[in-house]
Image (cartoon, rainbow, N blue to C red; front, side, top):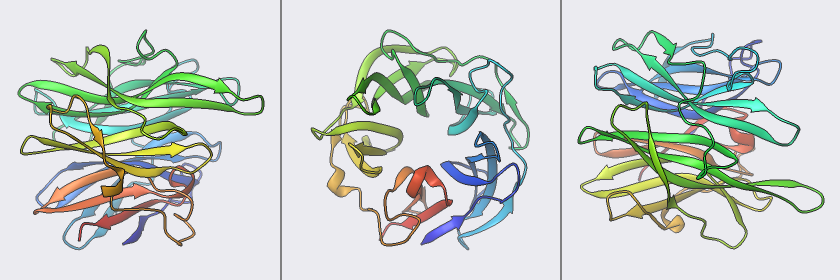
Length: 298
């Protein structure tokens, strides 16, 4: 269906609508959070509302909903949305990615948390610190969480950067998807379980997953890349309750096209099931530089 929203072209939002992250706010309306870069190339969190009946944006916030952290904090140079889930109080948690620049091209990320009221209006950071940071299981970076709540348990699939390599000319990060659980959505238990592993010999990164449970069959969409190739959207299924997934990328159903905004990459899928049909919101080239696009299941 092409691009549905583009950067606001203001000093707050010069480029990118990255990481589409929806939450349903009424029968046909979803609120989407996303990251957009300001004139200093630093990312903050914005939002818009989308009508699933008309397939139109009906409300677009031009000011950031979550702002950069203070000097030295884990989200000083970027705060991206990644997942929204209703919590035990009937309010909502927004899981975020905090970004700080290191000695280029190295960088540091952590998983943060914001609280959102039942009317979806007020957003407040839970802490100035991340709720999940590097560990023995995630030694380099931790990012890209996707969270659902099942049987009173919060379940998270997240991106773990387990190493960097250097080939004499370029540095390369290496990500895969690991799993964690929590009773309250704040304190998390992780044991290093790899849920979505590399599949191709040249594969280096798997980015933010999006997972739905269809009658016990867990279906995952995610981004992956191989070498210098731009991101592609992959697909996997799990029959063991979502703990480990089998890669089936040939069933992803979407690839780069000839359109100038997605002729190099497709990335960061978010899949909504609305009235029995799947809708995928995703980014194109350069991590969503031109905006957010929509694809509908045939």
